[in-house]
Amino acid sequence: MTQNSIQSTAAPWARFRFSVVGPLLSSPPERGELKSALESLADKTWIHPVTGRDVQFSAKTIESWLYRARHEREDPIGALRQAVRKDCGKISINAELAMYLTKQYDDYPHWSYQLHYGNLKALVEEIGGDGGAVLAAYRDPLGEAWQVLAALPIEKVRPTPYQRDLSEAHVKRLTKAFEDVGRFLDPVIAVRTPDGWYETPNGRHRTETMRQLGARSIVALVVPEPEMAFVDPSTMAWWLRFRRPA
Image (cartoon, rainbow, N blue to C red; front, side, top):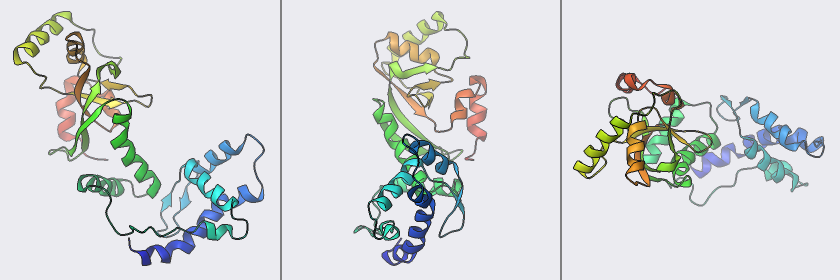
């Protein structure tokens, strides 16, 4: 996006932002009710001021508009105009993440720019914030879905609750195999839960084996799709083969 294109859309964006937060300025919520008012606005679907598409905004984004307008009593609409960044038109993320963001925008065109950015940032940062380490992010060569190869803290990895009971005999066999090879060559599949756990539908025994061997982390393929946590491990290969990005 160039400076000219940003300047040409600045006015409609400013008017749109003011139309969203204007009622909160003219009739401020009662003490303690601002959060619910912002969440109510975030639940609404709006018409994008430039593209005309349906779009939603987070409560945090709307709150930032409210405070910008509130602090500029003389010209609240002007305060909501988008400032042109000095690095406008320059790519500030690496090529791999740019590809991911482009695909995400194609898959979810109704998302706002803030939601796109927030989702991308979460994908990159959540694992690190949980104490893990992102080793690589890549597109599966078969289904072209994005996934992350990461070293996860083993204490945060748990099996999905509907799996079969742990087999000590299986753990013993895996222990011998891992010790013979001297390395871990079979990453588990994991899905991150909202509370920071990583549930694996197919790695219960490998995780327990690594835990008993004293490992502090385990390598996993972290898959963004939450439905992966509900896939029967016996049908995992079929699911991975035929799954396509929604």
